[in-house]
Image (cartoon, rainbow, N blue to C red; front, side, top):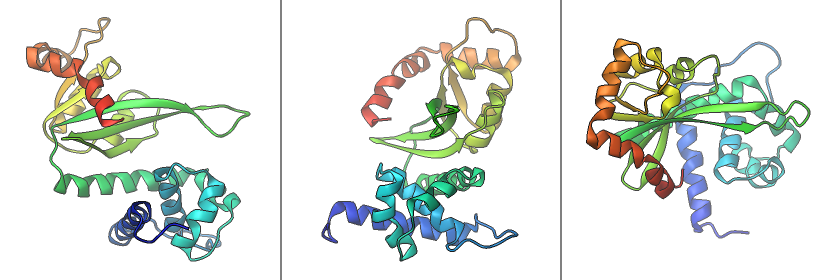
Length: 234
């Protein structure tokens, strides 16, 4: 039993209260048809977010988090059901977007970083690869996400969903050296610093991005991106 003044308990309570305010203000969870669940969908979403924050599995979340959020124990099978619901990823994506916008008001931003990663899903039989595209803001000794997408249709679709309107430099690897994606980043207000793909050369916006990338300070900044990510632990 941890003391209530323990940093872990304090951080958990702060995160919980913060997410409750996000739900109340944004109304991102709307009611639908059919039988209503015992607890609101937003409660299950908050439990799943806190589970990832604490790097816990569903059984640990059942004993550790459900009483905090729902005031009673919720079986891990129920959490599993909601975790696998398609709309849950959309709700959690909205959590990240809203929380990122609030953080941006408080924290400065030196540049933005666009990247994607792949990992295996929980379905052992299918073993499908899940791809996540994340847009992060980087400031001094801090990194925070402002957008996320699970789309895989093409290069530009997840970028359109994950990247909000902004300013400053946006670093991305050669995967994002795609004409529609580069144009989108310019339209959203960014200065794209994208590593050129040697097999691609056409397009007005691509040529414009190449000119920006070739500047010595931008070339150096792009090469140092991995050191910055390693330092920040991302």
